[in-house]
Image (cartoon, rainbow, N blue to C red; front, side, top):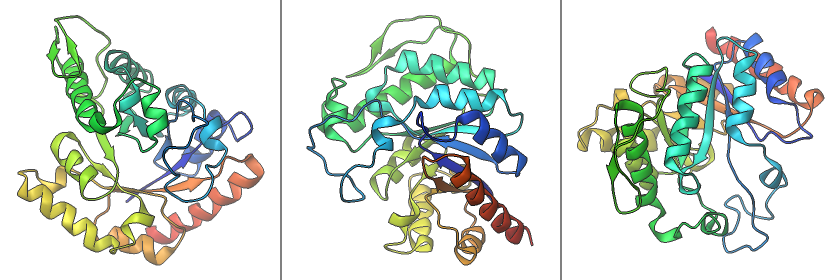
Length: 284
């Protein structure tokens, strides 16, 4: 089972290059960065975790730039968006960014995607909140076409372009894995429809039991004609509990990702050392 970390990088936190090196030195598999372009001062949508929205949401750096910085100083560490908000991204520009970072990293990019929960933020990008899921699907389909065809074209309700040329193509073939984030069952269905994996959160899986929900996801994939083995599960926000991690291993979770606070090295490195010890225990 792979182990990665996710962090909101800000101007005042540990920086991507330093964290990337620290993770690789300790043998961790991946570094993930969330995305928020901005946070509107209006609050149509409540923070899912409850209470006021924490400051890193307002201060987070661009995920692609942060990840490329980490990739530039490492050789094995995978770098991923956890997650990129497709409802706020032009698909042609995003396709170019994904291909570029995949080339520059030597094929180490993981494209975690999601459709977003913050209505105010999404609508500031000209997206209708109610139709965001169909928009995101079309953007994924369009990007796949751009990555895999010599002269791609796409004609949908929301995304429409004639034949064009765009290089570079991604280093990974046919493209970096598209790992769809969100809760069961709706985001899980999207992962099965057009993804190469699923990203649920541990705190949400815990409501019904991680094992129960994972089994439901795999059964749903089979029912929809997908081989669940081609849809690996990456659980985010996993607590530092060895029994829970061993259970994740038992039920064949592909990857667990622990959260890091937006803090400096003095706070981050002890957390990495704690997870290094857990990783050692898992290895037996």
